[in-house]
Structures are given as structure tokens and as C-alpha cells.
Image (cartoon, rainbow over all chains, first blue to last red; front, side, top):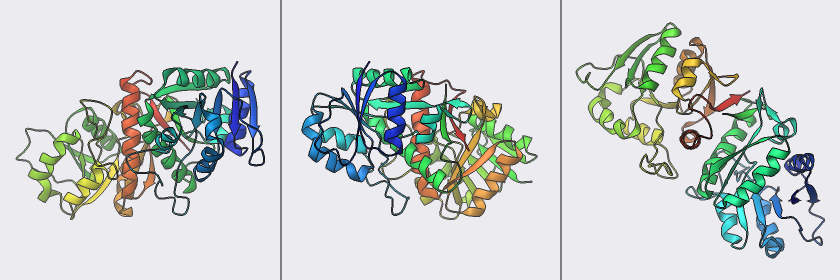
Length: 191
Length: 191
């Protein structure tokens, strides 16, 4: 059993909370009015939109030392839906990892629409959580939470692969925004 | 009916030839020994590995004027399998389009493993061809070939989205190379 803190009470935060709870893990869900409550989880999920991450790091950065931090963001330019706001050769996760040298930062869940996490499926395929990061133990810990929650976890590689995961998440969002796929569909990972 | 030239006789070239033929289109398949045969297709598929594209452009660039050119490449650094050889803020397709100002260049098929094109499916989902490009008519022409061949075509956006399609293709190849998925699986697009 792992103790999980989720920062952000939107659809992604709730979906990941549901997944972890289903797997028998303890979950604390922290919203924007919970500034006074320090995070206590071994795993901390940053389930806020990318523009809000900087403030979380500023107010809670010290609390995140020694913990596994999970970045779920898709750093889109939401005014244009036509590019990412991160440097072309980097990723949101790399930026977050650089700001949290005492945490083990992994990318996950950004390629999953919230509805597919709750349903456990993308169309007829089981929902799969792609995880990228440089710390094998951190990835395995998160993969265990995903698996006990009934979903499939796949190690997508090292932290540099977060760039490709963010490209995938970006593409998936633009396809849904343009009605080419639904918000309950998207990219399924077929083994 | 569209007349299609396919440059490259490997598994991708053969799979795309099969798809187009199945759809009732005429296909000429040109290999490396066919230097003397000019391309005659309204649609020309560059079904060679990315390092071989430059030579095709050099020898056949003038022949490609006025035609729809389809770039299927994944410009991996095949020595490391850990990065692309294209600039981080660009794509193979953008490079090819810049070299062929008199052609209408689209990205397609790079997110489809050859086996899934032949099978028509990725797991239990229909195989879907993602197409990116700036010319709507060129994309529609290719989408028609894909659809008559029995597969689903999805307009993935303008030519700048080729960058995300190449990230997806790159990620998919690394997952297969690391045995996380099979070469007959990968990313299915669920509507």
C-alpha cells in the first residue's frame, strides 16, 4: 500500500484518486484552498494545469523533497492549441525535475483522458498508462499503483521520453478539440 | 482512381502498395535499381528510410513537381534509438517540403507499423492513418486512397503537426524495440 497525495481536484485529480483508491492505496486530495495542509504522500501527483505548476513548486517545493513526484501535464499554448509552451528540445517534466533536485520526478497520465482512466478502457482496449523517468524504483512504484487499480502500466523509457509523451498528449488533445476523436477515445496502446 | 508511385520496395512500400491496389488504384513500385524510370503517379510515396530521402530528392526532385508527395519516414538516430536526427522544432516532413516547393507534401503512415496496414487492424481496433499537411486537397486525395483500401484516415492537422506524428512514431518504435509492444501492435486511434 502506498500513500498518495494528489494536488488538484479537477477531473484528472479525481480520476487518479479513484484509480489509487480502487487499488487499496490511501489518497489525500489537496485543492487550491488547502495551502495549510502539507503533502504527506510517498507519491505526489501534480494534477494541475501546467500554468499552475510553478506556483505549486514555489509553495510546496520543499515539501516534495524525498518524494516521487508525478507530472501529468500537457503544456499546451491554450490560446492557440497549435504549440507547446515548453522549449522544443525539452519537456514540462524536465523543467519540473530541474526545479526539484531532491525529488524523483516521473511523467505519467498525460496521454490518458480522464474519462478513459475512470472507464478503464479506450474503446475496446484496456487503458494504458505510459510512464517515463530516470528512476526505475519510482517508475515501478507508480506502475504498481496503476496495476492494482486495474489498468496497464508501460515503462516508456527515461525522462527524455517525456518530450514524446507530451507530443502525444498534445496531438491527442488537438484531435479531440477538432472532433476527430472523442474525449473518451484517443490513443490506445495495443501490446 | 488515382495513379500512385511508391519509391521503396521494403515492408512499408509493399504494405502501402497493397493498400492502394486493394482500393482499386494503379500502383507503380520503384526500387533502387529503377533510376531510369521516372515517377508517373499523381501521388508519390517516399517509402524509404529517412537517410535515403536526400538522394531520392536529388535524383528525382524535378520529377516530383506538381505531385502530391507522401513522407512516411521516422527520422530516428538508428545508432542510439534515443533521439531524432531532425531539428527539435522541425520535422522530416518540413525539411522535405522545403526542398520540394513545387510539390504538395503530406506526412502519413509513419505512425503505422507495416503489419498493421496489411492486417487492417491494431489489436481489435481498425488501423488508422494519421495525415498532416497544409494542402487540404492533397490530404483528401490521400485519405480517399486509404479509405478505399479499407482503412480509416484522420486529418491530424497542418504540416507543423508532422513534428508530433514523428514523436509518436519514434515513441512507438522505441516501445517495440524494447519489447513493450509488438511490431503488430502499437498506438490505435479510437474515435
